[in-house]
Length: 398
Length: 145
Image 1 (tube, rainbow over the protein chains, first blue to last red):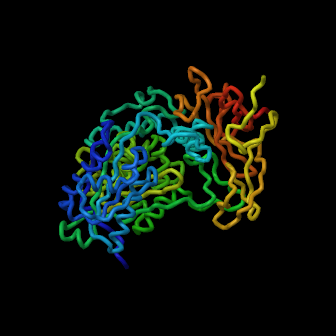
Image 2: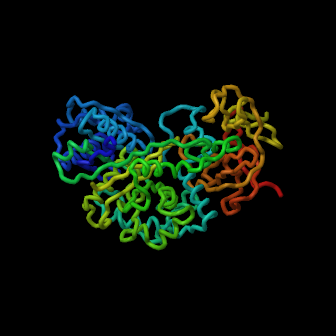
Image 3: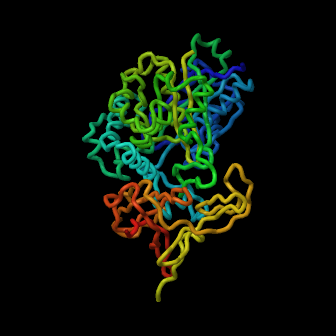
């Protein structure tokens, strides 16, 4: 069988925060940290894959080249990828494909963002009555937290989850974030403190909704052959899933006004969000039972519970049982978001899916001081970008 | 003089004051219904249809889920009141179309008045106004018994 894995030689991050500087600075800092971690010189990098940031003007749209230029042109081939929140895994997927195809040996994957304060709103100006992202704000006032609120309320109704359960997710993740020097929010919270924060989109409160952050993350990826010359047991990427939904997609998704109609074709056996991890597991030849640690996209605290089910840690409706029993806490059988998750980071869009992989690589190497999942050998990320960009990466020990 | 009743977005709903309906399209080849209207190509992966007919969607459905905007959304949202008044948002499942449609809930109905599964019906309400026009948008409202 053809080689299916690539090595993660190095990981690097610029701490998340609200620093107010150019996104290129964060990208360069993360890239330099990843190169140093890998023991790879910038001049050895043959391919640069950048995650785009659409809120930072023209350089953001060509983020790969903007960051490569700042590092000093070295003639590497370059690409820039955009898939909204999944942009980082699009960049990882492109770099991995180049390596597996034998086109290059060493690639730098990098994403960085500088974000405005407050709600994300449509980029650009002027009336755009054919753009669903513009229309959802104009006609509905449907911010991102509105969609998160709908999912959270649905869980309460279908499964009996409570506001305290959702708050407990934040409490759990805040303990991990406190131990992570790259996290933006280092404070720990109690359930009462979370429930005392202001309501944003019922039943979700301010402390349960992901903020928007500045930050940067980078990976140095290589072929296994190249990696063997540098290290004995590299952590590897065993799968990258970038699946789209299947029609009819019957869950209302940002930024849509409606689901597909399921009146003419049967609903797919596997939902979109379930298929994201399923395809990754199939690529890796692994299953949920093999997972030691997961990093999932907790855009809201309640959404983390959806992911437990979507990545197969439990059946639909049972996520809250895992939470209440401590299974997904540090020290539990399947810790989720030991980085602190988006609740402790806030989202730096093109960097976030890369940061998830940085965390898993650090966990598997045993370098996650203060939040280490003991004996972690296999980890999975899960994430989703606007308009149907699935994103899941499986990282494992070799 | 009364302002002109103008849809905030053209072709998405009828302007029938008493019994408004969402306007979708139906693929003439496979019968799949789309809202908002799809007029270029059928999105069913099994169909290459390019011809569509307009149809009115069900005026009633069941509440799939709901939430609200406790804070004023950013532009291009246009607030109706100063100071801002929170409003609820509903996702309503239409039985015949087997489709969930998102909409604002009429003023005066808060999340405390809503429950997943209750019957909802479509109404028209003001989104914004200028000197000549009252711009209308569809909203959801708990159905009269």
